[in-house]
Image (cartoon, rainbow, N blue to C red; front, side, top):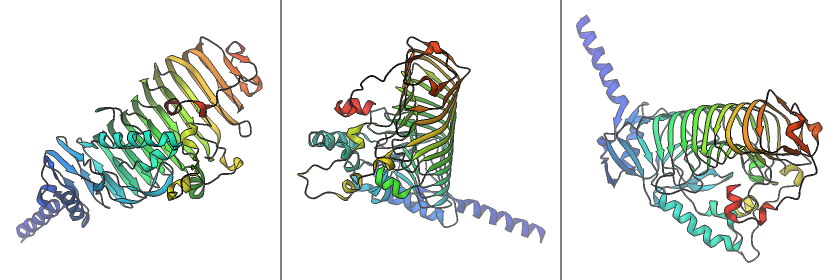
Amino acid sequence: MMKLLGAALAMLLMTGAAAATVSVERFGAKPDGRTMNTGAIQAAIDAAAKDGGTVVFPAGTYLTGSIFVKSGVTLRIDKGVTLLGSQDIRDYPVMPTRIAGIEMAWPAALVNVYRQRKAAIEGEGTIDGDGKVFWDSYWTLRRAYEPRGLRWASDYDAQRPRLIQVFDSSDVKVGGGLLLRRSGFWTLHICYSSDVTVDSVVIRNNSDGLGPSTDGIDIDSSKRVLVQHADIDVNDDALCMKAGRDADGLRVARPTEDVVIRDSVVRAAAAGITFGSETSGGFRNIEAYNITVEGKVPVGILFKSAHTRGGFGENLRLHDITMRDVPVVLRITMNWNPSYSYARIPADVKDVPPAWRVLATPVPPEQGRARFHDVTIANIRATGATRAFEVDGYAQAPLQRFRLNHLDIQAKEGGWLYDIEDWRFDAVKLALGTRIDVENSRQVIGLPPAHLVVRPRPPKEDPSKKSYEEQDKS
């Protein structure tokens, strides 16, 4: 009798194990790189979701449009497996989301966790957006828009799929050695979500050309997020905090908070660690440490906002960061990229798209000023820099209570610190070719007088007069 019970139990366990793993091959998926596998992969995910299971792929390349990982499902992409994104935008269904700071309908990502819980995308395989066709379509539209003063609308009207979207979801894991490459737009967008872990991803968006706005990891109005062991080579922000844009972001008013980013390297990007420019919902309790930023990145630490963004940043801790040949160590700009930041609808446009109306909704000046305070920047080692500081706040809302400790910076120029209040330096080692410009030395405590020059701020070039290309670089 005991033998029979043992055999029955073993059979039950084997059946459960078999049910827990679902191969896409069972549903007709073909790893030839040519067959469209969206339906087969989705059928495997839906089958695994019935009892909570793992979807697996035999080795090969699977062409697909948008797929949606369900609650309780692990999408396991093993070494030797590639999910290859379709180049037909019709294979990415348009659905409600937030994109670049506003809520609107937008094509789904290639791989989506959309309003789910306890889901995972893991493995040592590859998710390849094959995004050049979308990059090219963006540049084509932008060339047509720029002469009409519509640079700001380009990113919203040239609808491009992200690689992975985690939207309004919780208890999600992404990583395990995944290679993410050639995203059509942002690579990994975590929005309105909580308890998300990103561990061990390699992001490579600069093969097959330089993809515009191919951010690495965007954490957007989300909380309790851990990012670690990321290796990033992209053509825009690498590790970026976002929280909504202008009137729509102020309406939603959801902060990004309780975030840890650690043990990562940024090889190419617009900046190593970025806050903004979508600052409207604010940032709270964010820590980034053990980050290496290399010389293809123009700015190590970047805070950017605009006169219409609003929002705040508080209890931000950035420490133990190494920068090698990064031109600017710390940049803070509250008037970033005017041609993108400020939406003005031309008078000759009669049929105004809904998204344009949202973007052009006025924000009162007092509400539009972002307020950053109580920020710690410590244990920074920067060699080969061009400039240590480029800091421009608001006279009406100065950057308050920044603590800069144990800085070891070698730079040709000191740069400037404007519109600040109660900045304290401690245990700093600065080798600067020129001194740091300040308007009021009482606002800077702990820097040796030899490192400062007090004088009126020189006239500054209006950034809106710069070329679109130069504004993008800022």
